[in-house]
Image (cartoon, rainbow, N blue to C red):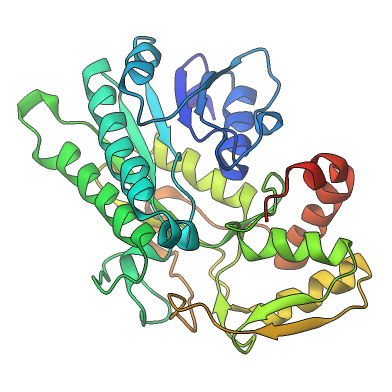
Length: 331
């Protein structure tokens, strides 16, 4: 954390669940943080209220806005802003390309021009690995059989990072690190049509509704608590050996969706159970678990929060913020 003390840092997408938690951690470390977020999939109250946090409302597609923000000459940029996520990209593929493709390119261009030391790019735990990756999946396994525009544009963002880091001309090279969060969950994520399964499950459970499971419920994911994901981001921004590399940020556990649903129903006292619905056309990965060997070796990263503990914290946050969450849930 000392690496960020008295530094000026830009966090795009800093009103979201990961971005807001990352912003709070950076502010607590003594950094001056500038948050850029258009609030298209988040809320203003998601930006931590700290004296050393400044909020700029706008899109990473807005070149003029980025030019003004990057005049502050940040040392680090954490680029999390994106059109989130798979189903949203299926419904809005052109907007997905604009935000995740052009927006990422513009952030990298401005970071290089401003002399930033490093850009940490939030990729995805599903985008690079195709529909049937090995278990556990390592960073070196790449596949091009994408099933959503979101996967395609996250891969595009990684390619742009590679270009700026390793192949741009001479002294203009920009240090970039690509992190691949796996199924992040925790306080900060408001439920909605395009959101992740855990916040939606908690929302429906607190309303006493059955939890809808697409498929059989035996599908698995590496659910990872947001605080652990943030720890990985911070390490990726600080470690010298991370430059030019990609890292899985994951719990390393393979957890069935049905087990998650049952745990949430137990924590919330929801007696409505579950209901099974049809699988989404793009949802082809039946099982997914990530190797974190590389992140452990290079970054010293290791997830610390077990599923039950993380879910309990998430439910407690929902109860505390229920009025705001109900008002902002977007289904």
